[in-house]
Every structure is written in structure tokens, then in C-alpha cells.
Amino acid sequence: MLELMLERVRRAELIDQVIVATSTGKSDNALENLCKHLGVECYRGSLDNVLQRFRGAVRKYGGDHVVRLTGDCPLIDSGVIDATIRFYLDGGYDYASNTMPPTFPDGLDVEVFSRQALESTFEKAGTALELEHVTPHMRNHPETFKLGGFQGSRDLSRLRWTVDEPEDLEFVRAVYDALYEKKESFGYLDVLELMEQNEELGQLNNMFSRNEGMRKNQKEGSNG
Image (cartoon, rainbow, N blue to C red):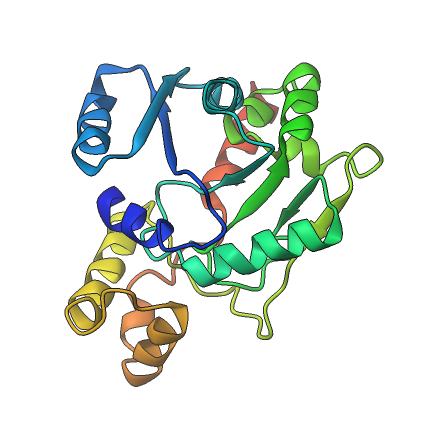
């Protein structure tokens, strides 16, 4: 799944270098081996403190701007990535994403932020949620960071194209089975057309809500 996602990410014209930032846990050795096979840089850091992991990767590889994509999005669209980056650069933002508010399907999420914003966040963030999800501190402090929200022409936020549950994987496999052999570079509009032709496809995983995993973490944090 990650190999297919990386194939799609590498089509983005405005990304200079792709880095897989994973943990030092033994279970992620396979990811590092995959990266070596694909010729993709792999940085390994803290399992739970993903913010620290991102900072370590940026300090090692450099760069003035960071594009954050999560590894559970094998339908990510390179065109959406480029459009979000252009929006961020043209607006002179410290942080921009296509999730404020979300208009694209869950699984097409793109975040872009400056290296300075990342360093500032690393110094000030402290909650478990902020450390695991990297960017909540930026989004929650508009008085400190210039924030921007890139939106699509249609509200498709009800659609779920991420992979967190077995039903999500079933949905993505069905999409790839239908589209990949015909057009390896298929985009999100191709998936929409497929769903319009096959209404049962969207029912495979529509019982789950958007960002369910993050809300679970928030609840656990408040109870802890």
C-alpha cells in the first residue's frame, strides 16, 4: 500500500524530495527495506513523538517547507498536493492545508508548513495529541501562525478514502482493481466517476466518520 502511495506522491511537480519518516521500532524495519528498494529516503525516529520525528527528518535533509502526508492514504492525488502547495506559497502562509474546513475526501489530506513553524511548534507543543499528530499546535494558534485553508470546488468531505479499518482496505482494493490497470496515474476525479457508476462501492466503509482516530486520541487524552 505504501509503495502505491509513494508512486502517486512522486508525481507531484512541486515536491523536491520524498522522505518516509517512520519509527525505530523493529516492526518498521520492513518499511525501511521497502524504501531502499524504491530509492526513497527513510528517516527513523520516535514511535509516539511524531513531531520530534518530523523535526529530526527536516534537520537531516533540510528544506524550507514541509509537506505532511500520512501513510494511510493510498489514493492521495498529486494534483491536489500541488494545488495545496501553490495555495500555501502564493498566500505566504506559515501553515496551510486542505482540511480547514475539509472539502476533499478523507484520505486526500495535504498539510504544508514552513520549517520555522515546525521549529516553533517543537519548542512549544506539549500534549500527547500535539506530539503524535504534529500540526494541531499550529492550527490552534492563529495568533502565532498565518493559517490558510485550501478548498475544492465541491464539498466531498463525506467520502472516506483513507485506510484505518478492514472495510477501508476493501474499498481501496476495489478502486485499484477497477482503475489501476487501465490508468496507473488515475486521479480523484476518476475515483468519483467510478463511485457514481457503482453506488455499492461507497457503502463498503461509509459507517466510519472522518478523523475517527484523532477523536479517539483526544478522548483518551482527556480521560488520562
